[in-house]
Image 1 (tube, rainbow, N blue to C red):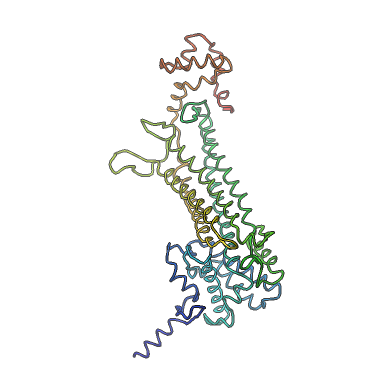
Image 2 (spheres, rainbow, N blue to C red; image 1 turned 60 degrees about the vertical axis):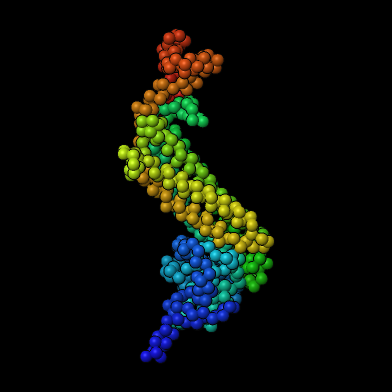
Length: 474
């Protein structure tokens, strides 16, 4: 019975070895010894590579491009490339993602993540070809899946690709959010209100202009996201360890980049200087800054919405935000602006992530930056948070905003700020005196003008015309 038990246990694992010795790998696992070491060493965040499906897909894209390029230069046999292609296409199609298990936080500049991909893809290819997992004499993780490569070019390239894939998705949601603000701008285009600068009454505008401006700010942030993506198109495939291309075949780098462009549909190119591209993190810094810009934009808008909806009795209360939940465990009737609040929190996190990217990018030494994992994790986290929150913010908040027309009208009628419209007729000195008297007496500007007979009713009507006040046709 003991012999039978030993036999059963032996069937549940396979033996693999590396530089540090042998390890028992679960028999059904597609990963290998180096992945297992990473699982033992880096149980840190609990967030694995497969948390982001596009990240897994990116590794398969890189490995497929490399295999095709190596075949084109005559280094890899076509039948071996065909087997690797089948494995890569399966992963690109969404299969085997449960085998990409390394923690996003890891030492070694991404070696564990690269080897996880190498081992899984090798074993998928082996099994698809009728071999057993671990029979690396047929397809080997290093010699075949990592042929002419290094973690130092594979890892950053995979990050570039996943950030590009994520960027497309984030931009689509940002566009829908901007459109929602512009739609409200059209809905509110006939509602005149007082604009404010530094929290004080300024000059008239429409609520529609205010909401169109919110949408236009997001439009500009989207433009920055698109433009910054161009920095990611330059990848260092073919650099291998430090940029000298050691172990890569002549012509491989150019063909690999061409394959990446074909697989992604993006204008992927190689750099002018592979050593600079391998040691520098400028592309990540520039791309991350666009997400910081999006965060700053959305945070400002969120804070403005909170301010405009403050009240209901003792605040600005020019707009109503949708009531989503009771706002207090102690104060009956209180409803809080929860969606702008959570948007602010995500924006703060994205701003912090950008600071992390800057520090990590600065501190990488010489020809390689060992801190790329935290750079990748920071930017992907910001992308994921915006991608998930923006549709909720749009549906649960922006789409349901309504205007408090009586409040808008009251503020417009009682504000001293309307005096600015009289400057061209009465002059700055006279309008300043009127503003001072209005504040001291509590009277309205128009009331004082009528008392002092400074303007005729026809002049007042023309000056107070909503179209003239706001610069738009109503």
